[in-house]
Image (cartoon, rainbow, N blue to C red):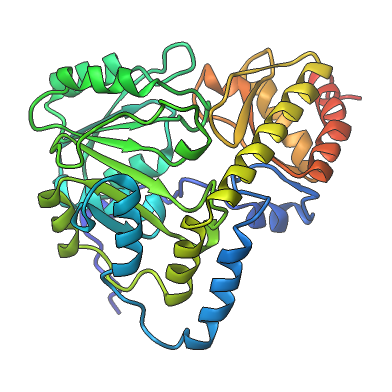
Length: 371
């Protein structure tokens, strides 16, 4: 009896995923997390208006949603200064990145990213047979000059840059990205991931014409808008590229409730401002907790903080393991030397109280496992 015949490319891919969810960690360890500080979710929740819209839409969840996303595109385009034809929606930024790679990358095509940057992008490139070229971080930030130089060297189809960056929380002023575009090689598309842009200082978002064919920007309702589970992301770019997404995207990926919820969330500017304030206060508290334990934090323009454990990656992994055993879910960067850090998401006051209680114990255990 013969089973499925996988293409050689798929057969050669490792059986790994970019992220292991906290629920899987809980099942493996037989625990329940007391503080969920690793997923970069907005623990303060979505706008009450969004929740009301979600609940109201439940009665018609049996209907297919509008696959053109007409109302949502109209609202977004007015806010972004573009046309609806410059916008495409997908299953979070992850889904949009996957569609972009499918559109542009054939087996063997060069793609450039940072070593240790958001892993889902690399996951998609590998799945379509692209040739990944990675450059190291510089001073705990993605190195734009090195990324663009590598893109020119290998004739890359795509170069990926997150601003602000995940996992380090660093960011560039938008003017720096605008100036760097003059060095982007012809035929290379900059995939600019702006998942955390709502948390960043004014001026972080570059001023780029939506019809500039060199750039496609990605944003989401998963972070500041507090709707990670709804899986709503979007891309903004030149019409010829955005229009091509219709050839490959899942047109019914977003259900009616998600469309209604994100539209209401987008219109609630007061709630977004409140979330920024709450996240800012939580970041400050994480810095205080770290300092009380002799640790330093990297500046962050996101809803998380990279906490420098002061030693190497093995030590940081031991601290993470000890925190997880104590019911505190956090993550860490994957690549040295950034893996000396823990990445701790903005949490509620109660969650950060738990972090303050358990971090010194985890540090002590990591320093002396026999204790």
